[in-house]
Amino acid sequence: MAKATLDKTWIYAGKFYGPGEVELPDEAHAALQAKGAFGTEAVTQPTTELPEAETDADPLADFPELRAAGYTSVEEVRAADDKDLLAVKGVGQATLEKIRAATQE
Image 1 (tube, rainbow, N blue to C red):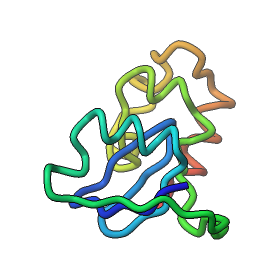
Image 2: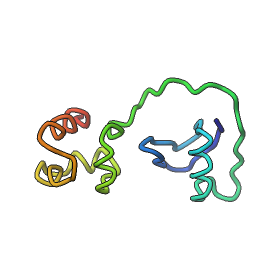
Image 3: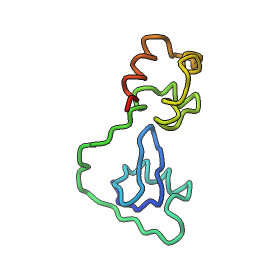
Image 4: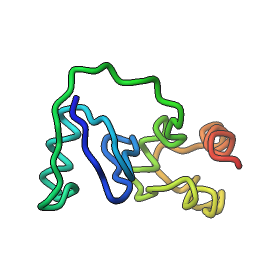
């Protein structure tokens, strides 16, 4: 695990990180560093602390087919018509109902 400060929210492996100080798994840290997430002045510190339980779970984490279809936020999913979501490969009526339940306000 590594501590880092992010100036905006990044998505890695279906999880949201930032903005602000975050604990990143080593794999996520390396991937975000390669994308320039930390800028040139940011300093990151490795840590051996165990991560705390996630309190803001990503509602889209259980629906990788949405990410594959280009949906990157809950707001995009909420705004999409049922017809559009049903057109996503792997989304049928039962999955659509689960998606709507997971992303309701």
